[in-house]
Image (spheres, rainbow, N blue to C red):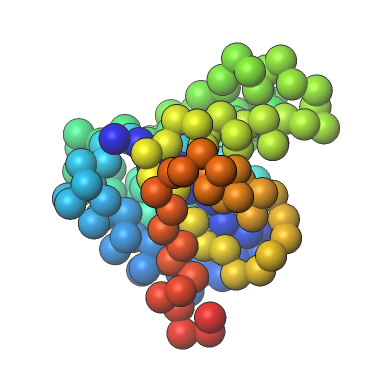
Length: 149
């Protein structure tokens, strides 16, 4: 089972615990053994850190940073800390200005579950989650568990 993660660029580190708990539930209760995350902002950085920790605890899981631009591979902190990077062919074929949306749509199509933190009604993460809704994916928005939401 596959889970793709999406959230806002300006996401606060306060989501870390609930993100970790929810991902761990997906591993233990739903059989998720593969995670995809982007590398474009605050949510992605928090998610990568959580996945690194979960990978240590659950060595059987696979975690991938899905790249929108190949040049980000060498500079990405997560890739130097035990997460593998992948660059899907359809993202490679997309025009540069459409690379992130192409990557996000690819991530949604791979997913059985979409784990997100959506706190507003606009942005790329929202578009990705709406796409997931259209594909009838299982969506878990952890924002509903946060005290400020």
